[in-house]
Amino acid sequence: MATSHSPASTPVSAAPGAAPLVRGYLCGHFDLIQIGDIDLVHAAKRHCDHLTVGVTTDELHVATTGGRPVVGHGDRREIVAHLRAVDVAVADAGQDIVATWRRLRFEVLFLGPQTESDGSSAELQAQLAPHGVTIVALAPGRETDSELIRAARRRLEPGRAA
Amino acid sequence: MNAINGLTDSRGSSAADTDVVGYVPGAWDMFHIGHLNLIKRARAQCDYLVVGVVTDEVLELAKNKRPVVPLAERLEVVRSMDLVDQAVTDLSSDKLVMWELLHFDLLFKGDDWKGTPSGDRLEATMNSVGVEVVYFPYTTRTSSTALRHQLAG
Image 1: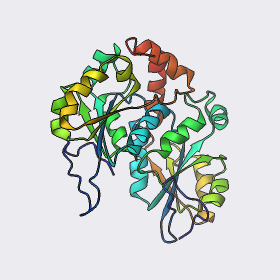
Image 2: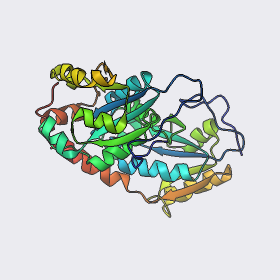
Image 3: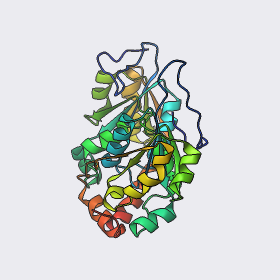
Image 4: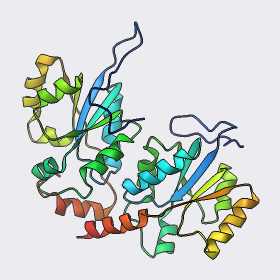
């Protein structure tokens, strides 16, 4: 079971002689968790053995979407920590990606559709390639059928790409 | 105790004969921390937890408003939580219907039902098939209402 209080450097060990476990890292907002978020973590878990999810701090949410999250960071992180596909949930304050890598030592960095579209993926690639990190861009998750949530998202996150 | 014949969870395992099976029905609309805490409490009291997700139609009849998130999505979100062994559609407000399918030992309900005529009827019905009704402090409705207001702007 995942817990949001685990140290970021949870040791991951493979059985002797087995292929080393692949650790992955995915960062996201996970505000009012819905099927698109579930799609992303499931897609990420298919590419790694141990998945750490970075949940954005409220400040980073404001900086990247232009609005405050509906659900505060602590609650968002606790819910993500209890997703079956997630091994560990940590806070992501938007720090330097190499610093995050030094802390978590992942082999795969997952990019949500947002990062792909804003052009920062090439930059991340350049920073992480020397450390042997593979970057995997994930397809967007499904959009919720809830009209109220879609409308609220457009209003509350004006800076977010569609 | 009991067996859930032919019913398996999303990981392909099923309840063992000796497991205490718990059932917690709810709307689970806009899944939030109150829901997670309810699931944690319920899971701590049983070996195998089945979460029932009430249909849009039943919720609309009971509360005079449709849920924000449709049934299929509410089911998927609940099913992806690690403490949930199985998520099913709650087919009827008559809990005997679900008991026939699931043969649970414990039924978890909000304590807003405790001591009410419907609560007494539910307890009598459930006790007749050997099920204990366990009440929890019911706080998720307020959170859902607050979220709904926040989303409506």
